[in-house]
Length: 218
Ligand code: DX5
Ligand code: ZN
Image: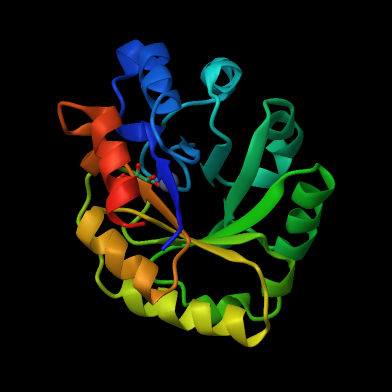
């Protein structure tokens, strides 16, 4: 099954980020997943513009930015200027989701909505046609290395049905607690994009781990 693999930089060695990006560049990874946290929407703070703009310069993989921040609409031009390809914003922070999605698309990026584990996929009924991607969280957002929530398989299946029924091209991305076995089940349930942090980085050979996950699930 052809799919997109997006290693999450959150599990990388932050003292040697250039080296980490180069390792990802040389691997069969498809996208680079960037987790942006503000300490308000989630109980953690990660990286911001001064770091991302340098990463963006050296990454040869398309940037998949996952914003875990309140008021994401304020920062759309900055993410566009840094060359972000897909911008994911959380459903839970957005009162005017349709307007913000339109702004992301007008800025020339692919627009994606993220759902927390407790948010049912059915809330997207009236916005799905506008979305390039839906990102389903399979852990509570904020940290890498958390326990996978098995109920996520069912959410992927239900969303896949909604997308196929309307003959849409919307991608389904899954993020949190991913490994090869869960990834395989997610792809069978209808996912297109797998994010993986701990599983890939907590091995001696990152490039080999990425290439193996990519090939095993093809
Ligand atoms: C969690 C982040 C994830 C995280 C995944 O809030 O959105 O992208 O890095 O890490 P793992 O794969 O270790 O759960
Ligand atoms: Zn993420």
